[in-house]
Length: 415
Ligand SMILES: *[C@@H]1O[C@H](CO)[C@@H](O)[C@H](O)[C@H]1NC(C)=O
Ligand SMILES: *[C@@H]1O[C@H](CO)[C@@H](O)[C@H](O)[C@H]1NC(C)=O
Ligand SMILES: *[C@@H]1O[C@H](CO)[C@@H](O)[C@H](O)[C@H]1NC(C)=O
Ligand SMILES: *[C@@H]1O[C@H](CO)[C@@H](O)[C@H](O)[C@H]1NC(C)=O
Ligand SMILES: *[C@@H]1O[C@H](CO)[C@@H](O)[C@H](O)[C@H]1NC(C)=O
Ligand SMILES: *[C@@H]1O[C@H](CO)[C@@H](O)[C@H](O)[C@H]1NC(C)=O
Ligand SMILES: *[C@@H]1O[C@H](CO)[C@@H](O)[C@H](O)[C@H]1NC(C)=O
Ligand SMILES: *[C@@H]1O[C@H](CO)[C@@H](O)[C@H](O)[C@H]1NC(C)=O
Ligand SMILES: *[C@@H]1O[C@H](CO)[C@@H](O)[C@H](O)[C@H]1NC(C)=O
Ligand SMILES: *[C@@H]1O[C@H](CO)[C@@H](O)[C@H](O)[C@H]1NC(C)=O
Ligand SMILES: *[C@@H]1O[C@H](CO)[C@@H](O)[C@H](O)[C@H]1NC(C)=O
Ligand SMILES: *[C@@H]1O[C@H](CO)[C@@H](O)[C@H](O)[C@H]1NC(C)=O
Image (cartoon, protein in one colour):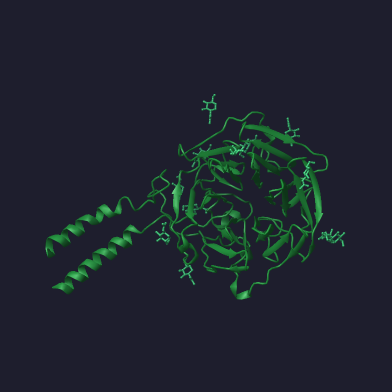
């Protein structure tokens, strides 16, 4: 009797745990943005479309408005490939190739530009160049901005940085024409002051040519270091990785630093983080285009004291697949790289995993290379309520109730 009791109890407990632990798992995606808020690594939007939509004529489809995060203070993230994901309030629009910034004082998130769509559709619809997520009100709003420059409307493939006084700097980018003609490209510096909610546009004569899909890294000295991307001068020209563009946010002046050392391939769609030694670590990217070939090396380090590039010596057996149009963030000594296209597949596979690089020892802590195409993947669309509750996932609140009768049955039979 005791044995059967035990078996039955174990069975109920296991099925309870199995069903209750069904939690939110984000779809593979590309072109999302990410931001670190305290210990939470947030992700915004991106495209969950399959490969067919990326081939010419390029239709960007299934543009996500999802907002989700995982908590980096949970040390089990370093040992598992199935982290606990948490959903937060969805954006009013689906968006990809946008950029995000966080006000360090109140954790408000600002999303700029990108290609905006009705959520989960390929209907291109334009709503606002700026959205703000207020964590206290748990909602997105469109800030009222003075001096907004309308040429920033529909600006895409940009990277924003925010300084300690709340000024956000956004360089250049591309923009589709309203009539569907060729895109326009820019080399202006747009500055948005979140304290006064005012916008200004600097047109600087010694600025680099119009550029997009670069990375931007702000140093405590007030210098922004721009790496990679492509210039547009009556055609696409890859930015030379040995000629690093920097912008002084005090004097509003551009300079070029010549970086020697290892030879680093030009790229778009890569990511960059600033580590605690003051080195910029770049990862991934592709040549010229979202479907361009993989670039070499995947991982490179720019020492901004000596302006020398180096390639960390990582055992070949210990590297994840190269990604492009992914996102990255630094947390303590660890670089978290997530989602994006598997660059070596030329856009055929979209990634669902994250990888962690120890930026002191230069070893990948997680190396799970499993990939998945979104094609044919089962999606739980429709069954997931649009929840605005950041602290819970979709299953936990309902499923335990379903299992209550089972426990009562157990109690009725055996006690
Ligand atoms: C968009 O998502 C739907 C539903 O999951 C799927 O059937 C469709 O194939 C996807 N479209 C593209 C272009 O990925
Ligand atoms: C930490 O992550 C593990 C594995 O995903 C999960 O089971 C656990 O609930 C998480 N802990 C917290 C406090 O989120
Ligand atoms: C897409 O836009 C067209 C034209 O504006 C509209 O008729 C259609 O209902 C939209 N589709 C969705 C899914 O919103
Ligand atoms: C912007 O201004 C309008 C009109 O004054 C107001 O209705 C709206 O609530 C304001 N939006 C925000 C986010 O403050
Ligand atoms: C954040 O707070 C600091 C200290 O009070 C202040 O100097 C800074 O201007 C604030 N930044 C923003 C964006 O409000
Ligand atoms: C922005 O893009 C949308 C979608 O393509 C287009 O309908 C709209 O006219 C564009 N707006 C401007 C100001 O270019
Ligand atoms: C707005 O931006 C455009 C493109 O950079 C620039 O030519 C123009 O001078 C700007 N207008 C203002 C008022 O700053
Ligand atoms: C990049 O710039 C370096 C130094 O200015 C130069 O030696 C090299 O040839 C350039 N590479 C390309 C591909 O233009
Ligand atoms: C940036 O420009 C300011 C004003 O000209 C200057 O004082 C400062 O030294 C510059 N910063 C760097 C890091 O060169
Ligand atoms: C890199 O090499 C070029 C050409 O040899 C030289 O002019 C430049 O000063 C070097 N830069 C650094 C930071 O050493
Ligand atoms: C990699 O991840 C997949 C799915 O996320 C999992 O099935 C597989 O066991 C993992 N492999 C390793 C070596 O952890
Ligand atoms: C879009 O799709 C995701 C996942 O498939 C879903 O969670 C979300 O609720 C959908 N959003 C809308 C507005 O339909």
